[in-house]
Image (cartoon, helix red, strand yellow):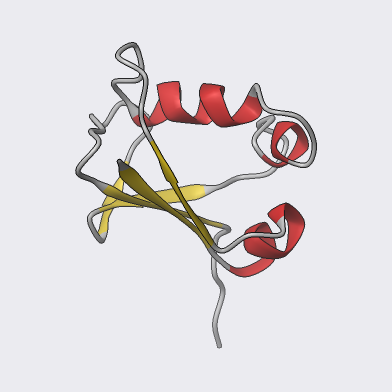
Length: 84
């Protein structure tokens, strides 16, 4: 199972900081996973509809939507962070 983590305002919106998902065989990239999550009921549909930028890290390395995912991965989603 893939370990999916949600951080900051995304975790608040979704009401969850983490979950484990058995990735379907056709879920091969971050973009596929985002489509899977977006296909869920609210609040996932709104959170992952593309209207807000969400960053992703796979196994603690920043990744792009085309990056491969597998059931052994830790995949973290979070909003951009600013600092000062």
